Every structure is written in C-alpha cells, then in structure tokens.
Length: 370
Ligand SMILES: NC(=O)c1ccc[n+]([C@@H]2O[C@H](COP(=O)([O-])OP(=O)(O)OC[C@H]3O[C@@H](n4cnc5c(N)ncnc54)[C@H](OP(=O)(O)O)[C@@H]3O)[C@@H](O)[C@H]2O)c1
Image (cartoon, rainbow, N blue to C red; front, side):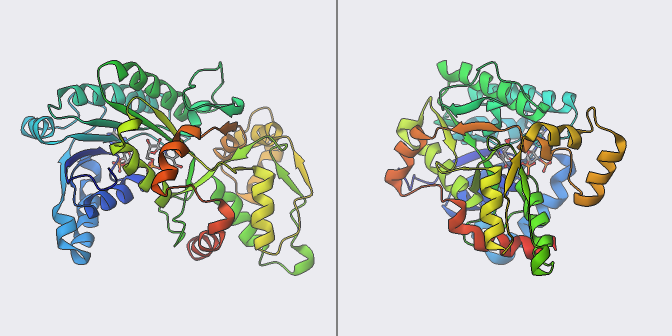
C-alpha cells in the first residue's frame, strides 16, 4: 500500500507551491504524471521541467504537461488529451485552486467551485479511476470555534474571505459525489516550509509574523520585546510542514480505508497565535509576548473596516502587514485529526510540532526574507 505499483496520475495544481513538490515526489516514486498546466503558466512549467532534467532525466520524463484550465468543462484543452486522461490515468489529484485570499469573488467561484464540478465530471469519465483525492483546506471551518471534526463541514460558520467560503462549497460537491466516485478529501492546515530544509515557495500567513520577529531580533537586546500578540488566546495558527503534507497526501491516495473519508492534515498540538509568537520569540531571543489582545480589532484595522485612515496608515508603516493576515486571526477551530492519525501513524507519518523544525524554518526565512 505504501509503495503502490507505478500508475498514471492526473494532477491539477501541479504548478503551484504544494503541487510542484507533490509532482516531483510522485514521479520520484515511479508514477507517470499528467500535469495540468494553464497556457499562461506553460513557459514557467517547461523551465521547471528543464531544471528537473538536469537533475534527473528519468524523473522529468515521467511528467507530461497537459494544457487546460479547470474553469472550462472538459478541463484538458485538446480532445486527444481528454481521451488520454480518460483511458490512461487511474488516480486524479485535484489541488488546483485560487488561493490568493485577496482574489475577487468571481474568480474564486469560477475556479474553486465550478472548477471542482468540472473535475468531478472528468473523474466520472476516467475508465480506470481508483481514487479522486481532493485537496481541500482547514479553512473550510471558517470561524467555527473549538474542536472541528473531520466528518463535519457545516456548522453555521462565517467566512472572512471568498477563498475559504468557496473551498467549503467545493468540498460539499466532492462529498455529494461520494455516492458514485471513490473520493478522499484532505484538509491541510497552514502549510509551511520543509521540516528538514525550511524551504517553501510561498511566503504568506505566519511568515509575516516571522518577518516581524526576524527584524526585531536585529535590534539591541533591550529593544527586543514583543509586548503583545493578537488573537485573544483563541485564534489559532495550525502549521504543517510541506514534506509531511506531501507524504500524507500520497499515503491517503492509496490507503484502502481512506475511501469516502475526510482527513485533517494538522498538528494535534497546534498553538494559538500567541503561543506560536512565544515559541518564535524564545528562539530569536525576544522577550514576550506578555499579553494578547482580541483578534477582531486588529482584523478590522488590517481590513480597513471602520477604522480611521490614520490608524491604518500607521499600521502599514509600522508593520507592513497585508489585510489577508486578518484571516489568520479568524481561525478558532481546533482541527480534530483522529481519523488521519488512525491511518497515518501506523505508516510512520505524524505531523511534527513546530518546535521540532523551527530551526530550519527560521534559517530559510532569514535567507529568503531579510
Ligand atoms: N498553501 C497552504 O497553506 C494550503 C493550506 C491548505 C490547503 N491548501 C490547498 O492546497 C492546494 C494547493 O495550494 P498551493 O498553496 O499550492 O496554492 P498555489 O501555489 O496558489 O497553487 C495553485 C495551483 O492551482 C492552479 N490553478 C489556479 N487556477 C486554475 C485554473 N483555473 N485551472 C487550472 N489550474 C489552476 C495554479 O496554476 P498556475 O500556476 O497556472 O497559477 C497552481 O498550480 C489548494 O487547493 C489549496 O486550497 C493550501
């Protein structure tokens, strides 16, 4: 089960932060990847493949680019391409999404919801389909507070951005398709750098806090103080390193007991924003944080809500924080990962806690951000 026979995988989102790592890892396991690429991204995808060729020609040869767009029915642009997916691919991994938290509603709707509906149709046309692995997100919990079960999706929660709301609705579509498709849903928490190297292509979310603290760590010792952290001791930032997410996705795609299930890829010991700030601060020899303020006022400032322009400008100049950061202060759910742990722990897969990989994470961030 852990080393399934090489097969052909149709992968969407394979040009993104997570998908690139996943494609390389799957190809490294001997699988052939039909990688969906949008016309506008084709050139950079080819450059990435050329880089792979230099490292490993066999690996590169197992990744084939298929031009298309999940926004369109059929997804793959050419009829011969569609036929190859239908007849040769046996696993479909759907990781494509609009992930920019500032994206407009229409784009999120078109790609995350309609795109997933198109993917379900592609899956239905795949003659040898053994699994549709849908990459959802912990964000589907919206602002739900307290333990959030893997089987749970709707609790009357609110969403602070269209990304989270449309990912929730996409998941609803995949759940409805369980009746006729072998689906597995994975909900990664906030993905951060590799647990060994710290490397990641995408710098957002918690990295703004890391950047703030890295800058502070350059100050003379008496000034290295973070008095307060946002979040009021309820906002959570659940971090998972990208290598764990890739390994867990691969395991779930083939595990016989994951069919029809939903799995949180999260840290069972996830910290609040304040707790996380304390761990980073300690590592960087910064004092604090001593207090926590409720997240909502800061979120209002970051979003520019009913706050004065002066206050917002001051925040911009002091911290250069993007409005999207406010969304991190809205996550109060504790992702219950009982089902994921039940399947993954026996395979030796366990989400490491941030304190186990904080060194590589900060080293990479220092090189990349300062
Ligand atoms: N990063 C996280 O912390 C995190 C956490 C939980 C869940 N997730 C989920 O993991 C998945 C991958 O996230 P990521 O961080 O790797 O995001 P990303 O770097 O933004 O990658 C998004 C991918 O989706 C593709 N895509 C977007 N619109 C498309 C369309 N209309 N047709 C075809 N492909 C399209 C992008 O293609 P282009 O290269 O052409 O833009 C890219 O390959 C997403 O489903 C996301 O919701 C991510």
